[in-house]
Length: 339
Image (cartoon, rainbow, N blue to C red; front, side, top):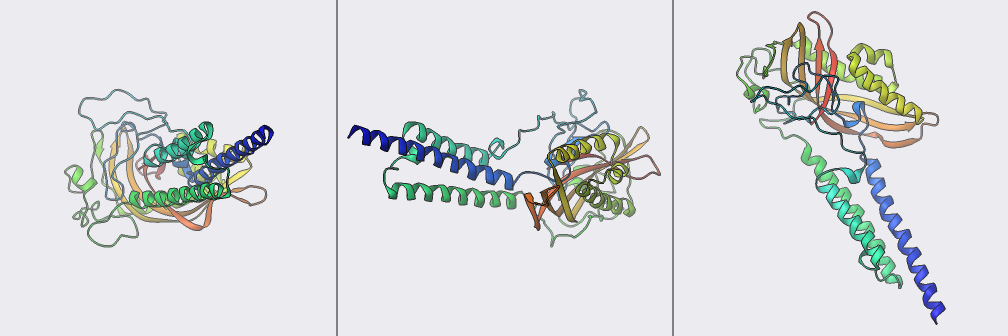
C-alpha cells in the first residue's frame, strides 16, 4: 500500500512538471509571435544633432516618441525648461520582461502555476483523476486564448485615432507648405507658432520643407526597409548616416551568425506627419512620424524555413524617423525612435 502511494506521488510530480513546461512553452510561443523584427528591431537609436536627447514634438500620427537608448551624441545637461527626457535603458528581450499589463498578467499566471507546482496546489492540484487533468488542460488553453485576445486589443488600442475624416494614404503636407493645418490636426502644428505649422523646437533655425522633401522621406523608408531585408549594405550605406549604418550592420551581422535573414516586403506608408524641421551648424534636420505597413518575417538563410513573423499577413508600425543632409545634398536617416 505504501509502495503504491509513492508510485502515485511520483506520477503526479512528473505530470506536474510536464504541464508546467507546457505553460512555459505556450508563453514562449506568444513571445516569438510578437517579437520585434524589421530595421532597428523596435529600438530607439541614432542622433538628432543637439536635439538627440529631447522628445520630438507630437503629431497626429504619433503622440510621443521613446527616448534614445543608444547614440553617439553625448547626453549633455540642458537648460531648465527645455523639452527633454532622460535616456532609458533598453528593456530586456522576451515577452515576460515587457512592462505593463501583459507582463503583469503573464507573470501572475506563471507565478501562480509554478507556486502551485511546488506546493501541490493551484493550477496543478487535483491531478489524481482524469477530470483533474482535463480541467488543467482546459485552463491552459483558456489562458493562451485570453493572452492572444488581450494582445490583439492592446495592438488596436495603440493605433492612432484620426479626427476629421478618413485616414490619408500618404504624407500629410497641408500643414507644411504654407497652407492651413490639416483638419483635426492637433500635433506639431499646434505645438508651437509658425506659418508652416511645425514645431521649430528649442534649438536651431526654422527650416521650411518642400514637397520633394516629403517624397524623399517616403522613398527612403521603402528603400531602407527593402535593402535591410536583402542584406544590401551598399544601398543601406547610401541612405544611412555612418552612425546608423554601423548599428544596422551589427544587426545584420548577428542575423548572419545565426543563419537567419529578416525578409521585409510590400512596404507602404499609410500616414506621415512632420514633427520638427530645423538647421544647425550648417546641417538640415527633419523628424517625421510615419505609420507604415509591411510583411515582416525571419527565415532560415539556407532553407527558407519560417522562424518568426508572417510573409502573408502585413503588420503595422509607427516610428519617428529623423533625416539629415547638407544643404543641397540628399537626405539620410540619422535616427529611428519608437512611439
